[in-house]
Image (cartoon, rainbow, N blue to C red; front, side, top):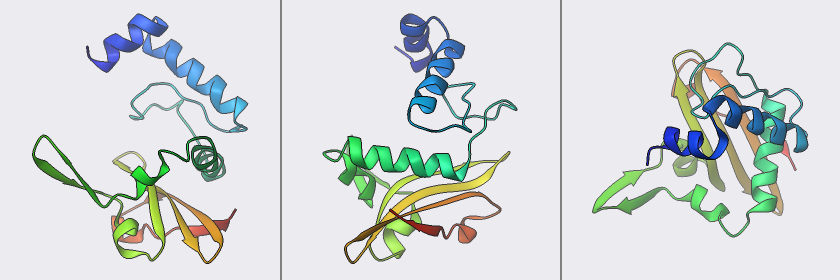
Length: 142
């Protein structure tokens, strides 16, 4: 079953799913995020902020600590093929343990990454970088 059929079966439409995603974002304190689709592909009404992405990152760490280690993997094997992480910070920044990277022409290169420094965890968000070499987050201490 494709993800679009799954959405239609369980939520009626992708738009209804996006509405529920937006409602859940509000519950998490993400006051400036609006979802319009499930894919993250460009839509003029789909917006977020770095502050909201920090809130989401902290919730992922707090709510799913048993799965968080997966974000720090530099590679994984699936069906006999090795897939490398697109998050260069995981490979190149001491203490980085991942989260999410992405590129869409409309918004540029984006990354949400966490790192541990001493006994502190840092959350870095970059949105709209023109090239991946510019994706070096400004860290927020949590």
